[in-house]
Length: 424
Image 1: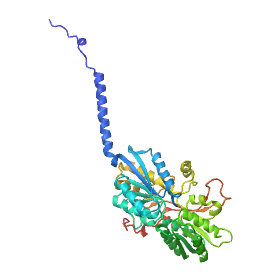
Image 2 (image 1 turned 180 degrees about the vertical axis):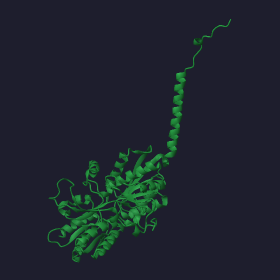
Image 3 (image 1 turned 135 degrees about the horizontal axis):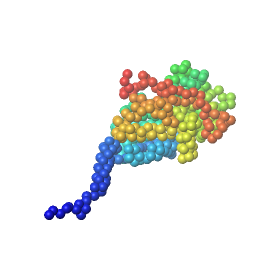
Image 4 (image 1 turned 90 degrees about the vertical axis):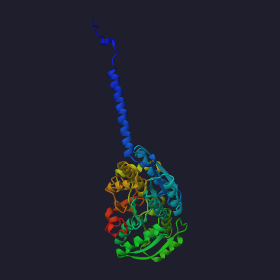
């Protein structure tokens, strides 16, 4: 007789447990595949995005670049979340002491052993030119926010260079043309005797002559000059209507102070000062009583609109002063670079630059800005006049807008460019 089989007496397979185990195993396998895929897609060298800033941190240009630029770049890194594609973003800084050899040596060290992927600024033209050559040799991204010499994206252009904020051509073109067209025909230049100053004088002279004016002469001074009396005396004796200041930072501030002492500002003086590169930080250092009436060109002003005010107030909370165009540009360009790395899924120089050049820039700094094939970031420039003390209504209320100059009118036309990358 066959006994019935009692299935209840046999062990049952734990089907739900097995199913759950399979789900977990499959999920783990899938996660591993996805993670591997992302790791393969996101090609970040050394698993870190390392950015560098080489600047004047304590010298005559520290107020207009230096610590403020470092702060702006760090703000951008923090606002990006401190990571891109899951990889940490680090910032390294160095003081070049306004010496080209120190700047070049530091850049080479960073690229060779420091694993730096990109430079977000090299302030001052002579160090910038030196580092440009190093970046070219090492095939690294380099963004310029502080230096002005237009050769960076003209005859010395290279595929991985971006000149973001301004250059000597734009400064001369906007300021000198506006003043000459308003009747300031005769010019005398007070020029800082280094690459930037000489370039600015040269470009401004071209604009003056093109607008029917005349350059009566120039006096050249060294960086960080301590006594401007003799230079101002020479400028005064020239009897030029306009004394163009082709210098920057503390040199500009001291030039204006000396001009005030010599009676070249206000009163019965028939001579007028034009600051070809003058930042809001310079005006703050001078005070409105001294700087009132000066004409200047900027690529950014903190009090233009709600967006500029929002960023600038956050910056002010850290630095206790409003940002100038180079410092605001440092934030904007850093964000643009990080977004390009994220979109390209790599820190490869060529791929990141392709992404940067193909993506318009729309933020508080620029609207519809674009990086041309020569590396020039084209955006609107603004002609301002410094307010009088009576016109200023609150702290840092220093500028009144005279004219907005579209980027394609402010910067060197590509047709005139000597950049070998520009097809003609």
